[in-house]
Length: 341
Image (tube, rainbow, N blue to C red; front, side, top):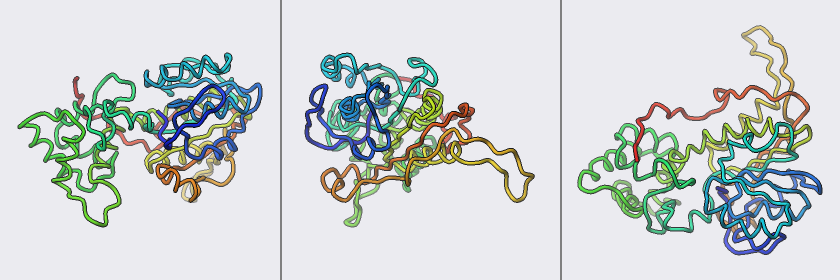
């Protein structure tokens, strides 16, 4: 579920990779993979990061919730000589498959992969007409379930909070009215309605449907909750001196990663209005200046890299903190109605 990759194919140890992840050299610099180390690529996708890590000599355990990504990586596993293992699971399930304090590094590339976007039948993009699906794991509630069954008030929250769409209410009400005539089944059907409600202006840099599609994808896959759970799991899985490297592509994701590192690398000392509390020892120290962003040269080659932000931390020998999701800015949408499918 890597969210990153540019066009083209490159050949590296372990076989061909269809896409090159953004910030590849910056990721390798922060991750510092070496011979004999074990690195988890929590978002295997098309294997771009994994291939580069293998090239550096480290062993890789790749996770992906998308069965297509696991199947496509089989040749790379065979060519790796036992140095690459792929696991079909969510990256938040990390500790179901590795021991605590056993890893030298974890890298996460958050969001949807170009491989998924490029396949019309997955329904992630309105640029290629396909079924309104968006499920990374290919099971559970789909985007079609949401737009065809959710109340307009619930859709307004989803579009407004997860997509930061200013016209969320208007679009949600239009969807609710339109589905009375016929259910939404395809990506272009939904995108077409959104264009009618919110026509594209000459000064607009993105398509009017972009934020709604982003919100639906994020909601259907619980991407922000997954990210939060994975950060806590990675903290426990890393050994002292291990490195956590996260590349995000959206402000909501980056806020969660930033807040996690602030909490884990900071000192809790109270405010000037409250009594001093005991300082909490840091479980991470930050690696370099943050966030790291793509160079202009990379952005020209791969426009998808423009929104990418990299944050990284070095694990200390302090016991992992409590997995308290309340410290992270994860929107609470749990109260929304369940959309059966």
